[in-house]
Length: 246
Image 1 (spheres, rainbow, N blue to C red):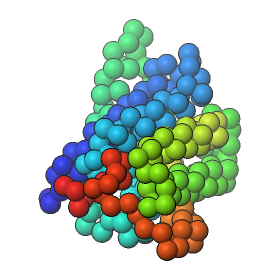
Image 2 (tube, helix red, strand yellow):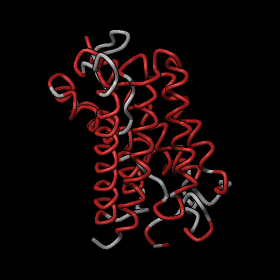
Image 3 (cartoon, rainbow, N blue to C red):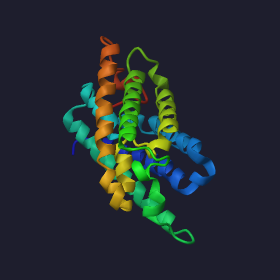
């Protein structure tokens, strides 16, 4: 594996995102509500953008990596390394959260309580069907990927790129949590689903396919609107760095 530091950074960043975001929903969701969970996801991404951005660019989301791949900012070989790190980080975070939540008095029923897994139909927080969840995941992932690409473009003030990216992740969670707990991130969905099993694994396909479609659309929109603009070189940004810096 050529870029082990990128794999490690993405694993760490995705761990923080999943443990912080999903963990806030599972452990403190009744206290902080959807607003608090949305901010937990946004703040996790914001912190990691500056913590690991100089190493990997802080994708911490396979869909974001797809968007960067479509935009030719990473190669297929590099994208695979990002995906490996992201999946490892998400699964480890879900495992640690599982150990924590099972240790509480009275235990924790994974299937009944959901463990922060994404779902539609009877497993949607507000009863949204497959179609509603599909639209939300595609549209909001497209918005996220468009924001990532735009905030790290040469014409943007990339020193502050982590701020709009963290804020947009908060925004889209405010919209999407009532629909399907919001994914826009296949790794985030995979981690909890592996431990819940059953219905969560059965519905997991949507939270892989829809974010990928959204990522392609977001990249296409960015390519259309930013024709002629150039991404900031890795050495000039703390949050837009990539494999060339490693």
